[in-house]
Image (cartoon, rainbow, N blue to C red; front, top):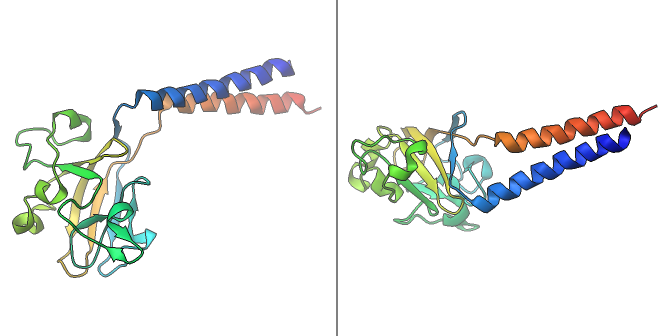
Length: 196
């Protein structure tokens, strides 16, 4: 009986591993539709500190320095500070209604959206300050091929660099979780049977 349970445990863990490998091999875009998360950076807070960065992935960590727009701490910052450019936050592209009139702005609709740089998505420098809290966006994390919804609720004046937004989060793959659960449950059952 112990051998059978052990075999089931190994089979469950192997199936979970295979699911992960297959998911990575197919490499389809990932859409985050999980519960929303609110992120906020206070005025004057150091953008180099992890607490002031929304660490979405290893490649994208959104923050803002005290004089310019949105940055990706993973690519726009180094030990000496952060450098804002027209392509900041680097490694991302954005879609709002301004470039997609009449199109549903939602991460699940990513294939129908036109993506541009962050500033352009909100109307560029002249109107960005007024537009940023008015338009929901879909953000594409380019290196990770992830799409998510993001809505700014607060954007501080240029000095201080505060901002607040809500964004969608990842949803665990049910097949992978199910296979891991089967493997773990079988291991637990095996331990119970093995104990005299």
